[in-house]
Amino acid sequence: MSEINTSDIPRLSWMRAIAGGALWAAVYNLVWGLAWFVFMRREWREAFAAINRPLLFTVDIWIFWIALTFPIGVAIAAYAANPARSVSALKATAYAGITLWLVMTVGMAAWSWQNSLSIRIIALDAVVNLVAMIVPALFARLIS
Image (cartoon, rainbow, N blue to C red; front, side, top):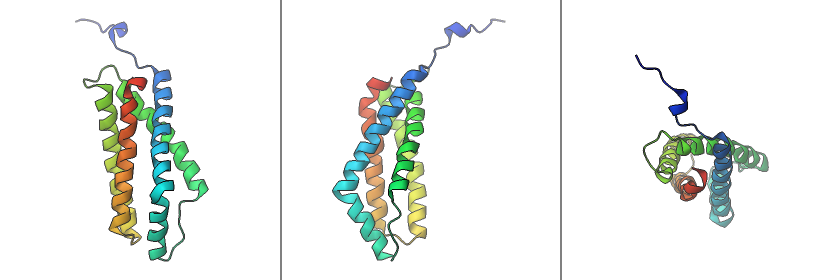
């Protein structure tokens, strides 16, 4: 029986994963920030006005979300930088982002539907989030 030599196992660089996570989070939040100030803020205000509720996206929520995107980015960067994977860092980052996007879209759609928000805001949010999840993949070479 042969022994497993741990020096033969590829190692994940956690410093690169953390730096990559920070880069991923920065790009994701930049994309969302641009979308928010260009058109999404207006769309969300109109959607909440239609159901006679105040907009829930306050500064506190944004700060919490920005902080939450850092560990999300680290997880995606760690997955993309895993030396044992068989696809490129670009594809790995995109696959991880799309998987997360699917989960988040289902959750957001269910929440929006329960709160009687329009299909328009659900679709716009899903599209912006998909773009925000995929654009950081373009920087995958920097994080792998």
